[in-house]
Length: 218
Image (cartoon, rainbow, N blue to C red):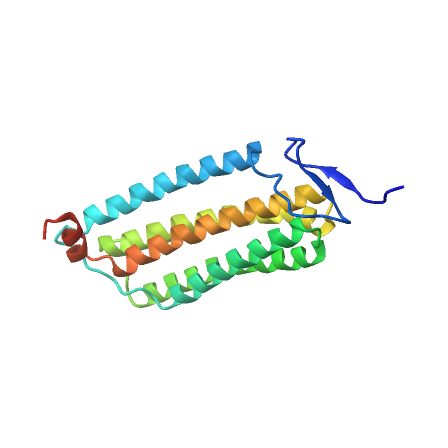
C-alpha cells in the first residue's frame, strides 16, 4: 500500500493534492475564500492609509506645521519588520514542502520579530515623549502618533492570526491547512511592511517644499 498521505487542499478547490513523500510546491491557497477576503481587507486598509497620507500632505501646508525628528528606534523596528516578513516567507516555503519542523521554527521567529516591532515602536514613542514631543499641539507630532498607532494596531491584529495558526503549523496536520495559513500570514506581513515603508518615508522625509514641488505650486 502506498504510504503517501494525500490531502486535499484546505481551500476545497479539489485541484491540488499534497504528498508528504513527494510534496512538490503547494499552490492551493489561490482563489480560496479566505485568500480573497484577505485581498479585499488589504485593499480596504490601503484605502484607509491613503486617506490618512492625503490628509497628512494637505495639513503640511499650514503655518503651524513643525516637523519632528524621527526617533532612531524606527530604523530598528523597520529592520525587525523586514526580518519578520522574510522569516514568514521562508516558513511558508518550508510548510509547502512538508518541512513542518523548520517551518514552525521560522514561523515562531517571524511572529517574535513582529511583536518586537511593536515594542520598539513604543520605545520610539517613549523617547519622543521624553523629548517633550506631545501628541497634541503640533500637527506633525499628532500625525506621527496617529499613523504609527494605526499601523501598530494592524500588526497586532496580524499577531492574533499568527497565534491562531501556531498550533496547526506545529502539528503539521492537515498539512495543506498549515501551509495555507502560513502563506496567508506571510502575505499580510509583506503588506504591512510595504505600508510601513511608505509611512516611514512620508513621516521622515516628506516636506512641505517637496509637496509643493510635486504639485507644481512651489
